[in-house]
Length: 439
Image 1 (spheres, rainbow, N blue to C red):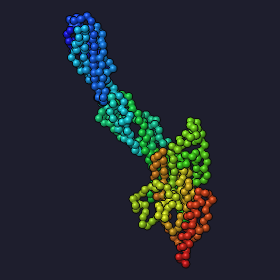
Image 2 (image 1 turned 90 degrees about the horizontal axis):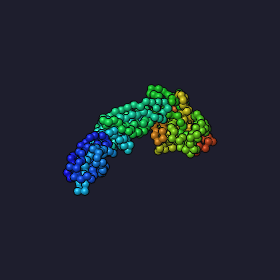
Image 3 (image 1 turned 180 degrees about the vertical axis):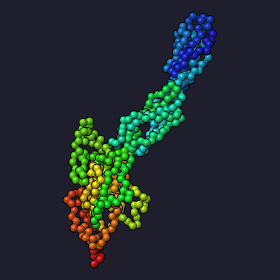
Image 4 (image 1 turned 30 degrees about the vertical axis):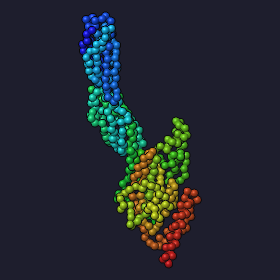
């Protein structure tokens, strides 16, 4: 039996190879009974390799080896056997053709959000199936916390070269979820897309410019009335009050509360009561805040590092006495301020558990106005100083204001009782000591 000649390659595709061999007559086989086998093996990397042998029809001049991986070197040889023994042809190495690539691994996709941009990076497909020529990213907004942002528009497309596996998507809307569809391409075309959703960070609300504008409308010894103007939301609407998680909304400027029936009824159509509560808590939760900072000649907020917002809410009874030199006089639901409206600092009322205590005449104060936007675990605050209250001019006016403090009677509301009594006692004692000192 003679050794068969080297296999001839009839056709090469991405996942199959067709081979020819010479006519196997008696002059080669030396026997009328013989078998033809084609053996192949390949190594693809990442621990992927395969070796197999296929029995051929001896009378067929051609055979197809299929189920091969694209763009891979495959070793082929023919084995001829008869009762006398076996003979092998020389090994032939053939590279299969390219194919469209596999998907980009989802685990490699990473989106880093900012307020108006997203940084996206990825890795090459695990099965490139050839030489990657480019990447294509289609993206569009699918939802937003800001109802003013248009969503579900036509997708935009970004094309990257084969050696670039990252991109910064800019000019995006804050608080908006974008869907990215990423796919790779070879000379044979694009492979399947991998999807990822990334939500940009919300931005702090934009407050009107108070620079050079005196927001003070009226001033007494213990109060100052200022003009509050609504903010413009950026990525998260200033629309829902902070106690939405309990299913209640507040009436304007600190009156009673009532159930938010429409919201609950809407959620009941699709969820249980427990699930509805969880969904409500995830809604945007925002507010306006009025902050009073006591003027200190030795240390002011502007002198110690510029204009920073007040992140930690401090009630009146916790301010001073070695603690912070500021307190929250009010927290207002956004529904209370659809347009510019006056607000009196020191009106002796309670706004969302914060007592708006009368101002002490012999002290100066900075009045700050804050707008807060919150979405789930993210909170952004913008603040501005809107007024400054200077010391009362006359001693008689100061004594009269202190006398009014001593005749203070606490409200019957339980939430304010202890706070107001302590504050009244402290101011009355101080006023009495000062009167005795001047006698």
